[in-house]
Image (spheres, rainbow, N blue to C red):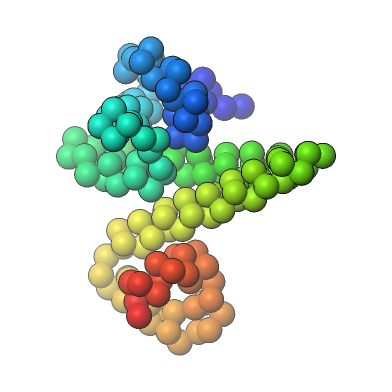
Length: 165
């Protein structure tokens, strides 16, 4: 079951109406877990600064730019953010099972969003590898077609073309 704190974070990221209604009332102290508090702070600061909903990719970048986190904090925060992507997939599946055709369109949009989120997380993790490991992975990408195809799907086809071609 999703905790209240995770539900708040998920909705701050995915639901603009919810965000506009509740953000003024949510306080840092509502989050006992420091990593959830960091995610909330980054969401709040981004939304306040840009008057726009934060994407998972932007949230990941904001967290990465913080200087007050340890590596284990950063890893746990990324896992929390990744869990939010899983929720998007699950929500899309639930909509797809609906009898309402409008829900099917919304489900397809949610799947595209979840796919983009996952590709962003994958790219971030790949970029965090040491240079030797990244080079080894790219060598394998260039020598094994099946792995190449899988890697491109994980990385995001357009971004792969931009970064490596």
